[in-house]
Image (tube, rainbow, N blue to C red; front, side, top):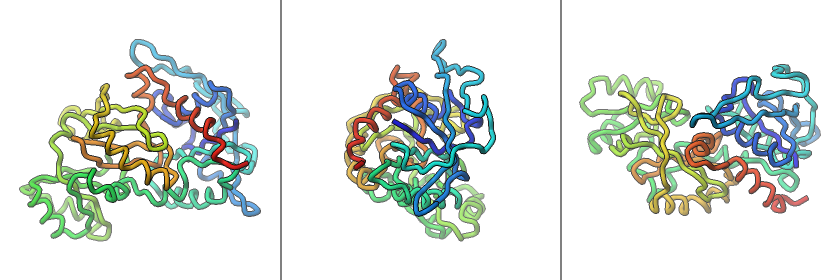
Length: 333
């Protein structure tokens, strides 16, 4: 089979951390062709989505002394090892068996337009993961609000007084920009903080943008769990624990990763989400859970596979690729 991955420039990826690389490696190891492209290399021609595609060959990373180690160089392109040129073969994406939309957030205008281009991939010929319509429908903060039994007490507002009232009711809260990623811009709110007004003004751009505010969950000190779902089913998890004086557990801000288990409560959350995720074409998803409460649903470029594989001695990338190949009959040819 042929797999295309829409990624950030490959030389910027971290092969020891990036889930995109893990899935590309898995596809190659299972005997499939792996091609790469970028957002700015997509087009619509004759009513079909096209891309400048380059074949890539990867040298799989190795586990040494409980850490991943990559070769140097760890990838090569058809037009030269480590080439960063924009050359490639202009190809209808319908020639691929699957297309993975794996450009990292935030969801910019360019990202949004790329999803519109991907709408012109014929779903009877090629599976797009995740569905462009699903990605557009699933803001990674707002999407969780529909699962009211799973989430902590939450509001979304740009109104300073509404946020102040909520904070005083809850005693402490966490403010999240709706378009944030990797923990960026997340703030701990204390009702006694004299900077409250300024924090809200900065986060809402003087009341122009809504933000999410959730009751603070003290269990966050014990970790922010990332659970990876494949077609609505949990396949692995990793706990991200804050370090030092940082209250956020995100790996991008220094959170320490640790082995964990998926609890019965967390499995029930997955059961609640599964029908909606499948309906929206959200095949590969990462949910965040703190103290048994769903806090986010990550659909754009969820990560965590490398960390789970290292801690659990699994190969989740291969599990994802195998699911695609085994369910290719769902794509009518």
